[in-house]
Image 1 (cartoon, rainbow, N blue to C red):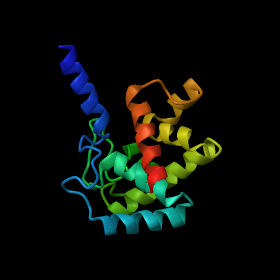
Image 2: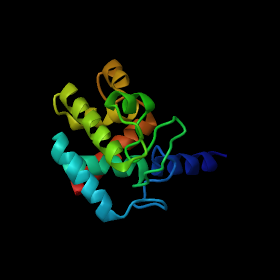
Image 3: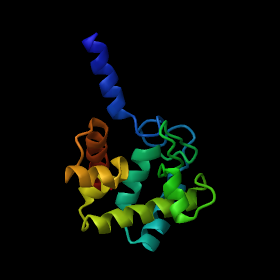
Image 4: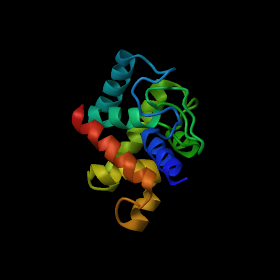
Length: 157
């Protein structure tokens, strides 16, 4: 039984919020050139490093614009409906709108946490309320694994 729990825990760490997995370019994913174009445009207009935008996008959806999480997050950057509404986007599954909105949200988190990328990434996953409540990365296994995954990817881009 404990072996089964260990395997399930490992699989949980490997899979992103969308359930589509963290392996780059899962089925239904956009091609790498399309993702690069979306990331570059959002990065330039949003003032967020392209590597960070790409790392979050890939951790969230593995490049699948149709990804939906069990929590209701949608699209490439896995936007919650409230975040999409705050950006004024009509279709959270539109890749351009989704990446622009996700990048703007990421920029706001970077500003809120004084450019502390670790805290901004943790807040992107767990919400700023959780990061503020714990005065750092929340003790949630999913969030801690997510932060490591995103930061490793960011540093490799």
